[in-house]
Length: 199
Image: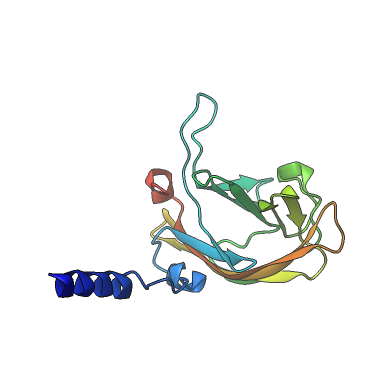
């Protein structure tokens, strides 16, 4: 009987010895171009993805929204509403080229969006830094990265946005605090996106 207990303990120790950390890059969706409605990136090495929140009267708390501003600009508003420490990322593309492949260089952001934002391509985000700093806001600066977007309009209605991107952002309050966004990718189909559940 003692041998059986020892074998059970040994079995538990070997099966529970899977403390190897998960590589955050392995959580990213594959890079696709077929309107799969996927999004992912690493923010300072941590996996970030959109997730819906509970709906309210004034907002449906969607994980991703594509917003057209001033006719020729497009914004990707990405939010993780489900985490304990929620995060958000806004990517603004100035002079968006429909039905084409274009690389946009990230420039300075004033932390605003739409008509209140600057007249260039930019990004900014809000993330939880640590217990001491709490939530912090970060914004792009001149030539701080780029985004390669392929936009395809299929049969006049399906509008595919697929992209890879990387950038650096600086803390809007602490000038020596920067973060990196790496391995960013998305593959969105704007028509079906409205029914996609981000969970």
